[in-house]
Image (cartoon, rainbow, N blue to C red; front, side, top):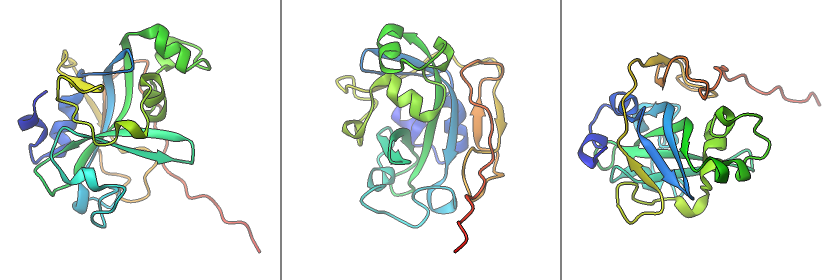
Length: 198
């Protein structure tokens, strides 16, 4: 995976191309098996839909850097910044299969019942790799970076469907995964939480 490919304007195509790539951090390497594309200002589900903020600043370029965010007050999730500068598109890394460093991943994810669950889901993937706020903004293509994105074997088939857990543009089929892979998360459409009656 190179910067020119990640900077391509079509974030959905870039997302598909990330499947099979390797992400290495904290002594663990995962092969990416599930991702979601987000198209910045053109996408109501994107964190950059309403423009730049302190939280999403790295999404506005250059491509190839890490955008991490904290969710539900307890989990980190990681995106790869894509697209031309100022476009703010990104690909959420939803799941991966641990191909190296399984022992370290198991130590970080002691609740995982099987190895297929170590990095199954975006928060679990970050935990298995030991990723947190310190990885925000890192250049994933720099050989000296503690978090590295490298090319792998593209899957023979790619499936596509709606994104998980988003309220805006939830039917856009920009979630891509390796069909039949045990690490891919189950699809759940977002449902609004009911407000307590006063």
